[in-house]
Length: 148
Image (cartoon, rainbow, N blue to C red; front, side):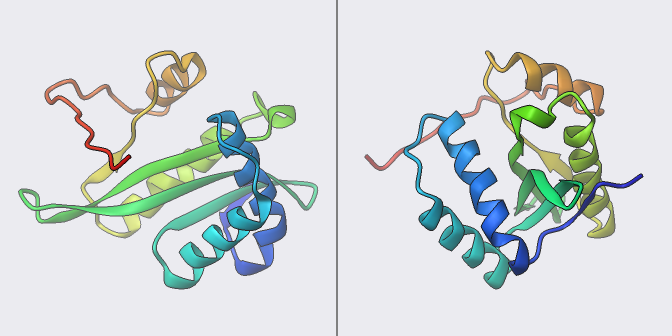
């Protein structure tokens, strides 16, 4: 049974709570109102694609993907930027279902694929992604330039 679907504006109250939990997981301050505003902008402006996982009409997880483009391949890539499942629903297959939604998006948009990054210490993610067909891409160095 499919437990995932594309997010809508009607999902914002529950989705913002999940997004806030996700941000807290990454050591950010809780701000549900700002989370809701941020997600509303992404959905309204079609800046990203967000899919949600449900259990008994309650949102339990989400994945958010942003479009990128490869000049050499002359195709779109999708950046899987955010994947989160509420801790009470982990280990039940919701993450894999959300990743399958991401893969279907990549196929349906004729993209080159999906890119993602996760911390070396993220044991769960580093087991999950290979089990879903992702491979470590170690042919390049990943650099970051930050504006303080």
